[in-house]
Image 1 (tube, one colour):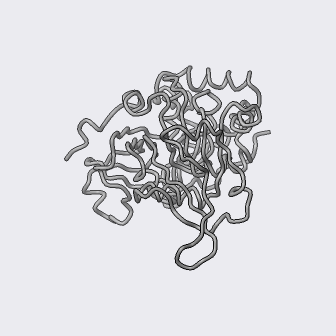
Image 2: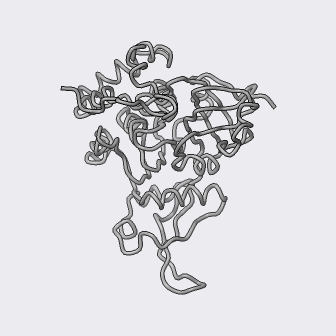
Image 3: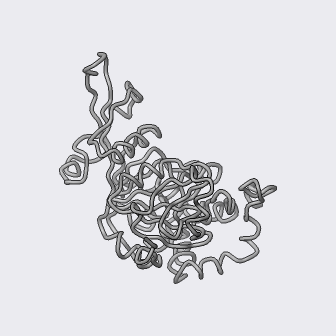
Amino acid sequence: MELGSKLMTLKEAVKKHVPDGAHIALGGFTANRNPMAAIYEIIRQRVRNLHLYVHSHGQAMDLLIGAGCVKRIELAYGALGRYAPTCPRFRLAVERGEVEWEDYSNYQMVLRFLAGALDIPFIPTRTGLGTDIAAKEGLRPETRRESKVARRKLLVAEDPFNGGKVLLLPAIKPDVTIIHAQYVGEKGTVRVKGLKFADVEMAKASRHLIVTCEEIVSEEKLRHEPELNCLPGFLVDAVVEVPFGAHPTACYGFYDVDAKHLYMYYDSALSDESFQKYLEEWVYGVSCHEEYLRKVGEERLKEITATQPYGFRLGLDRRRPK
């Protein structure tokens, strides 16, 4: 089966699979493989009231929150490493009470996505016992009454087999997951090179899956080193080929982080006025991903293109510009 109707533009994929109020999960990790091209399009389409699930996320999550697309979020943490110890728009939204949020550990979020992928309602663990994560709820009681939201953050229960206490974590089953991959085959096979983070688990847990990718390649190419392939085509609902689709975050094997852009974003995101100017210039001010790349500029894209065979850019200056 060829990709056929699954091959879409960004506008088509977002319009079809990301309605107002959707529960969505985002692949990637802090400054790595965020599905940025898809996020820009969600913002341009002014999608609202999203319930967001992320493992440990950065640029994409922060932009969605800052643009007013997110109603609530469940996460481990939100940061961009050295470029933003805490995502600025996320922090401001939490401080102002503009979004509901609930926190888990990294491992707990992976387990919750795994439970969704296994189609089980919850999953036990011992990690987190005795911590504030187990003691403090984040979501409001009225939110708990919504059909897609877990009735409790977690439950401390007795281990019926060995005794002692365990935590029961609720499964996550998003309406749609969006990930950015290096390759998608002509029949939909997905290959992610390098660290996969929680992408595979959240993709399998989701009702629908949008995959943006650097290249669409032949299935024959993906038959070489098949152990690198991570998702079959029948799980994929939409494929969008978008070179540099994770910019300004990194995509291993193709390009490194755009440090200059990330520092510029952080400074812009610290105030409402400068953040709005950033949105007008970099999101609303461009009509499509191709126009966005032209705005970034060929010279900048060459600066961050990965040095082969390393998969990242040797000698990239990651320091804050003076």
